[in-house]
Image (cartoon, rainbow, N blue to C red):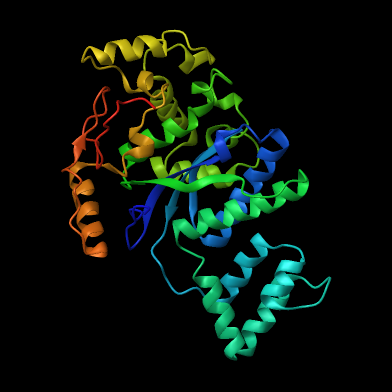
Length: 338
């Protein structure tokens, strides 16, 4: 039986990861562009903020802030519905009614304005899909699966199992560490030397034209201030203070992953920017990541919500690199790297 997902009431941040069936490299650049567009549509509809993301040929990562649940006025419901369903389709006509060619948002607006039992049903059905990380991921994965199967003349499931999630403390240090891990995915995969050169990650989108939404996401991590200073702070996390990659995009000064493993096997510690170039299982299997106090509070919430006593140990400090003050809930039984 799947373990209940760690969630927090009142708003929280999650690192979500999902893979294709068999981790097969199914998605080409055209597919990833559609997935990127649908990511933003699903986020707009569900009312979550994308802090950063990375889309690859066989999996994707997204770091999202889910706000506290609040009543949503009808005009906002209509706006969000338009973001997800800008055009008439068989699905929208089945869901909210209307005739072929009618704008779905206009049909929804008229239905809600009637204030009858059907309006109440629609309002409830839509609001239940908002402000929840599971509904966000379900919306994104289902919509993309339908598009992908229709486009590639295939059928059946596209994604393997349910998505993994890591509950992350809404703190600059914890968030920036997880964000860097996500944006460095194409570097770990040896697709590029610098994430700015990989089109389908948040960092690269933030540097391009029309990246206002993802720039707002990064500001949601680092706070306000001059954009140039924010980028410099982030590049220091991505590349460390001593790597030439910080200046010219090369990976000079970085230790090969094999040497990283050798140093850690001997009980050594390395700079965070070096270890982040490996697939670190804390960020996928740790369940909860943040300060020890935050991790303990999340475990307490989990126990109260489930009514069970958890066999999980107390918060475990993260080992192997210089990330002081961070802990996870689950200890890694089979090593730091996956």
